[in-house]
Image 1 (cartoon, rainbow, N blue to C red):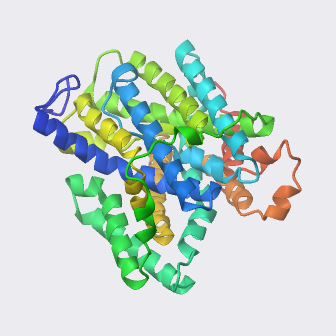
Image 2: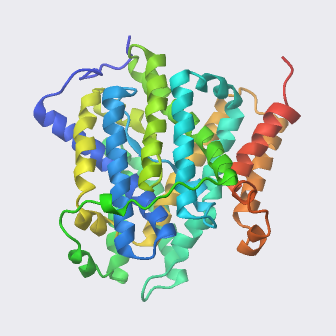
Image 3: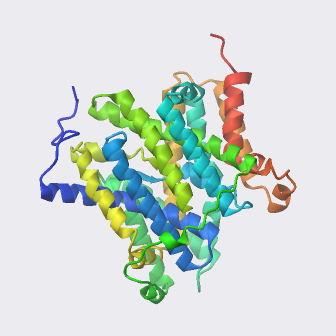
Length: 429
């Protein structure tokens, strides 16, 4: 029996008005992650704003398709889908490689994940991710993004300077945490959106951003003529992203399990198997389109509880809305005018939540937190930080085939915590 008295159960369809309102609410919650991560990755690949807009269009399209397929043929749960922060770390750490090799590796990772899901072999890999491995992985994501976040905050626009950006970022971050303490319900769930909107308005008050150029975009256009990814298989890059996909799969699994426990649907295991499979197929699609792959987001249970609505059909308008937006470059370009310092500040807030989640896992799931636990996690965190801040000159001295592995702070952090957990500090049965 459900402990929560839901207004609408999983397979119930709300009235048309409520369906649209619930769908818009999910849409508002989903868009910030697509804009933030999409814009960050697009900025890593392209200098021209036109190319960046096309990239974000494709992120919206892939997320929309994956979401709709998950609802009808995947896990069938009220879970939102968006770009994976684990793959963001992988892409950031692979900037010395070609775009083709990066997204070919994402396609391979998606294929492996889909096969593991369809065959049931994924269950054997779950044993590798003990609570402290999961905790370290969550924290590693935040730590290895530090160089990129620093660059976002310190990048100055016309007329601004580094000191102002630092002060502005600190002010916005503390305001987000203060708001997080006092706001409740939908306001808390959409806090990152309001942080982006208000932060952008305030920053533009001091340093206005020229948005007239966005008016040059067509109102409606497709992006299917800009599929430029050629299959390029680099062994080191593939291994690096396969490790990232292990972490992505555990994130995906945790999101589905949390909703399963909340609404207690039928066929829980089959839902997880189908969900993992569709996540893999969605990443194949993302790699084919040359964009970052997707994952089921773990914040969904909070939305379900606050709205008392567990209907999966409320996400159909959300998916259709994302699909519609993906063909409107003018709207995407307008959303892309968010100052980089605002994106960096919001990412700090999000990554602090990531660290908090990791610490909760570390202290709650393991019962007694011992000195050995700290050593296992500490080495992985130290290695990830050191490698993430290595200079390009040092990274270029690594063997080419090993550079995507040894030069990726996140990958080396995960590998080291697995070694510490399952070899050095392995507990006897």
